[in-house]
Image 1 (cartoon, rainbow, N blue to C red):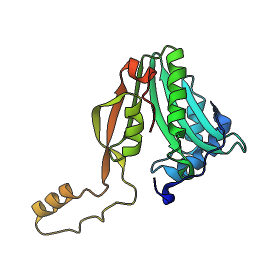
Image 2 (image 1 turned 120 degrees about the vertical axis):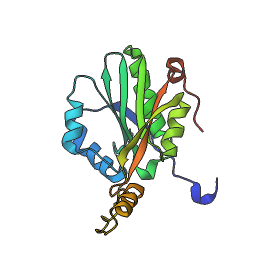
Image 3 (image 1 turned 90 degrees about the horizontal axis):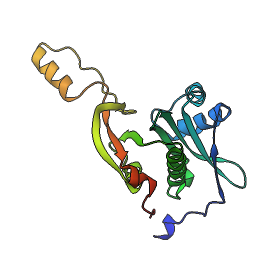
Length: 195
């Protein structure tokens, strides 16, 4: 690791369950790091559901929100909906700690199936999930919007076939595939150590 890659050590990390009262702070962090962040109300509504799974990671000293995990438990399944970490504290094990805590709690509660989806381009998240034994099991084509990459509509042409061909090759609202992932039960209960 070069000198430019050094990061200040994190203070003690406090992991805890979150609720609707945490929604404003979670929404602020989400807006700063996610392309399609939920609103404050969206997080509050999710927190009020019976199967809501919300975990936060805070700095032990100041209580500053460093990251969160949102999921939903339905019967014996956990759907991980969102994991986010503040940019200044990434690559320090916060997402790994959140996911480990959520999976540990899920296992203790009798969850047998865990699944999630992520942007096909999100290599860091995919590596994190693979470290817990998740494997790609499918794709949702064009699931996510691609922020800031809308193409201007094609002007009318005399050649209708040419216009249709151009629109098919360059859709007006580009989208990105989602990769669906799930782990074997034994894999997520015994994750590999992180880097």
